[in-house]
Picture 1 (cartoon, rainbow, N blue to C red):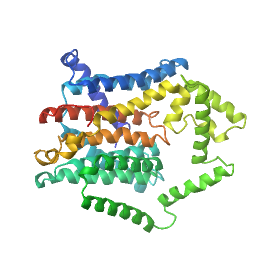
Picture 2 (picture 1 turned 180 degrees about the horizontal axis):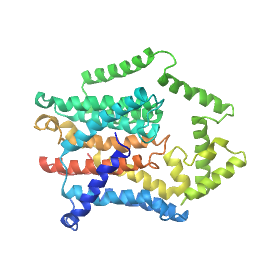
Picture 3 (picture 1 turned 180 degrees about the vertical axis):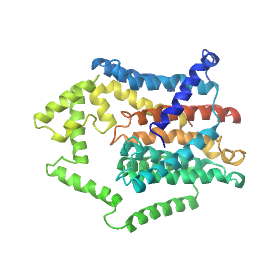
Picture 4 (picture 1 turned 90 degrees about the vertical axis):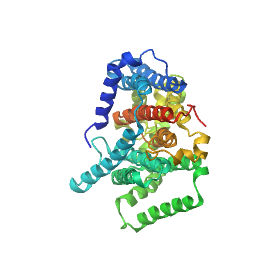
Length: 407
């Protein structure tokens, strides 16, 4: 709801970690998961800073590495003083609602064609949808008690708000990642999904598809889907002057350059110089001159930071996936839903589900977008994982559940 609003809470968390450092510095860590997260953050920061140094921009390029490094003391802080999950769930629900309200305000009051939420339309839409998915994670794992029904209402409204922000922003990359993340969710929870629930899921999908088909011809969502086919056909006929056409050219350029220097890559500056030379030589379309990112995080990192950078990026996602993957006993055990008096807020299963959602969703979005080049993408990834880890530590201590990397 505020420009760079996610940074305010992060700054407060970081300052708290520094102020209370004497209370956590040198103390035993709860388990090995913390060290794996520290290693992932540190390695990603190292590859970013190495790129900046090789590009001759040591200080200017230190911005993003410092953010990942800043998450490390926050990890130790939340491990020593883990937050109650209710505050995390409340923030997620209000965040989803807020993103939907902001998108509606920008679209229908300010009459913006694509709401951008003080960042850009793609980032805003994709992060809105992620918040909506996190709300659904709460609904899936929460205990349905009448006494705490308002939590379920909060998550429902948050899910609707997140979806609203995504649809109004017309960000297609998030829609692709939604499918990927939903499939992972259903695979993980398949033993807990009853036949009635499968029918409900199928009916919901049909309802969404049917609603889209009932929209007036030529609506914005329909146009965005139609543009995909039009731009692909245009590219096949040699016209790359479109969003998708430029992406195809960028992917080819990034892959070509990455294979030329596979170990360390060309760096940010080197990639830009080589890309411009390929455009001048007629090997790529002129639209690429204004683009500095390959719009595919994996190819972009491979071209700029080589296999080392790609390994660091994948580790940043694989480590949280392994850490948060719901344990088999949590999925099978009815007690994971049955007896918690806080309506499932401190339920390790729910926290593991949303912890799994964040890296999986990011991995899907980054097939067509550079999430981590934006401050919003970096902050949401590093510190959402940090907060979910802290809440999971609290939940496991409260329930006396032994920590484990995965099921």
